[in-house]
Image 1 (cartoon, one colour):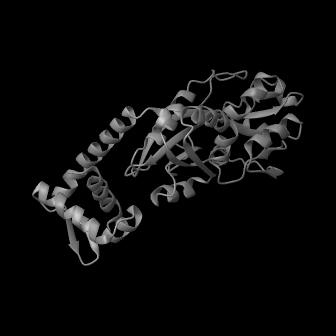
Image 2 (tube, rainbow, N blue to C red):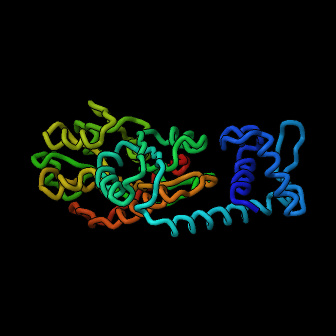
Image 3 (cartoon, one colour):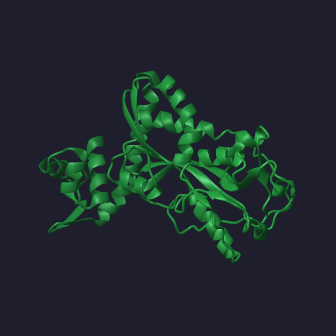
Length: 317
């Protein structure tokens, strides 16, 4: 029983197609059929029902599916453990959220290149929906984003770090002196926010709507890092991940506002497709992301007991 055959079996189970599996793995369709025929002969039972162009797992195939995933994952882990990082070669394709790029990426890339100088890194920014599509079509190896907790059975969560999102203001803003701020006090303020569709912007809008309120920013921008700079320059208030603004808060360039009725926590997540071969290149990056979770404690605002708000869980990301 060869690992490549198990990998082929898993792809067919996911795609429900011999021809699409052949195209995705770079095999001829006859080679795919031959691999499955050999596997079925070794196991002594059919694994797929083939009716016309429809391919479905048999009961035996469904039973074997769990074992196949475990076998492949164990083999990948063994391969990675036996290959020193300095000898790792090839490429690593990663899709990232913009807010992750601006904060965590530079340090991660520096450490990764030091560990794996022979690996070619191919990076791209993408939305959550784009990441799903890229993973399902094997156009990327890893996706690294900031969003809701992962609820997608076809993906493997490799790292999950809770990240609070906070209201920020220029130091001289009147609200910066308040120990507790009601949501109603924010409605008339000038806000600079990320674009609608970004996870924590949507969570903010949901929170406001739950209280019958809405914010109307005079500026919307996709770059969280640039928004942070604009708030520092006194252009208004914003709502950004704490890791984006941590340096400015610690340096006394911004104030964090305590808004007890709107406490949002997103998740910085790294994941890959469950049928993806876990390469040594991927393993090193996953290890570094997990290490990055060891971060300094949150910078507090003036707080009373806060009511936690959980963003809408219906979205995948």
